[in-house]
Length: 484
Image 1: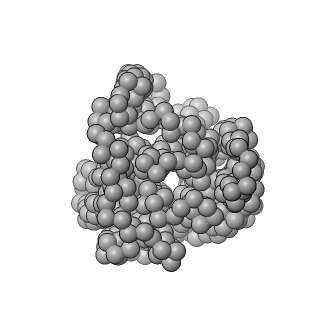
Image 2: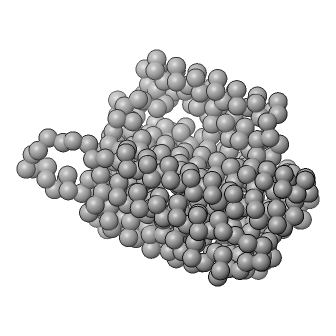
Image 3: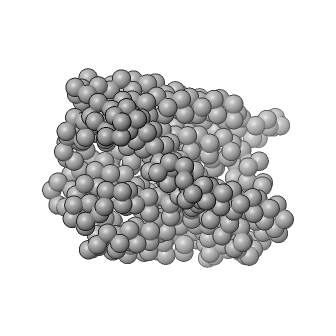
């Protein structure tokens, strides 16, 4: 059952203000997922992190987002997207302030967990606001294309911003810059964001708890495997994730108000879109980790030099977003997603020819150009496909699924690349990695990422097909703008 908050329909001009507001908050969340990479050495030095503990600055954020996004999406449906967006943005701002002011390793990790919780609710709530502000048609495709492109664009911009802020102002400003942006968002939102529908069905807390447990345990298992291989802890996390996942499926099949109703996967191209997002996320963060290690540990780049070297990838990612959302309304999401994933595959293969005595121009430039364009196109098409044909009552859930796919994909990508690099480099150097062994490990990781991206091409081609529709003259316009 649905109830209505005081409805204030968004006019055509106001819709684009809504997009600007929610994208600003979303951009901060995405930036924080990658800008930290370039600052890790400075953070470890200032806060006294042990070598094996510094990864938790990234892990704590990724695990809390990946584990709570589904619940965050359902909260947006249950409490109202506008209200949920405002509360979670305030929480994200407070956690960002705590990160910037953290004086110890433990305080920073705790603040990063809180920051991830805020982002896990803020992101699907913002997506749900967009779904309510933009009706089906070309404008929604453009809005979702811009939103979806923030995933890849924000990731690459984060590397540049992280390098510049770390070098010029200190690593704490990576987090502190979020605060004024969030304050502006909170001041403008009450006047501009639309009031929309919310459900009165009870929240599926058992489903939420088991889904969160399954995702968190699965991600912890991957991170443990990346750092320590197969041991009792990694196996325990994996078994716990399987049990929690099985319980979640049983609860959802038998529940009267399930957290993830099975009907969501029968809508449009939701399943295919989410798979494309997961695979693109694996490729993106896996490659970012590899390129970060190669530039800073093999080529000797500083944080600022590395950030500046990623500008070309940022530019081509923006171009990929713009061209991708333009093509979706004309050719459908299948073609755009397929082309995007093909470019990711080719670029990973190009970059896998890394050498110890390489350079930015010889070893990275061409591959980063192709990768940036592919990232923008793949995320735009995947995001639109993941939300195509979804009922308004499930807009928050669909947004949560899409963002969960992105968070899980990027987290798995970083863990997969780290595991491959560590394993190859250690074996090649008899337990004491050298620059040559590290470079070999990076090259193998990129080859594996290319194979993963190739699977994304297969998913896009086979799962992003236009569902058959009964011919009706009155519906011809709507069908012409639907994503394939």
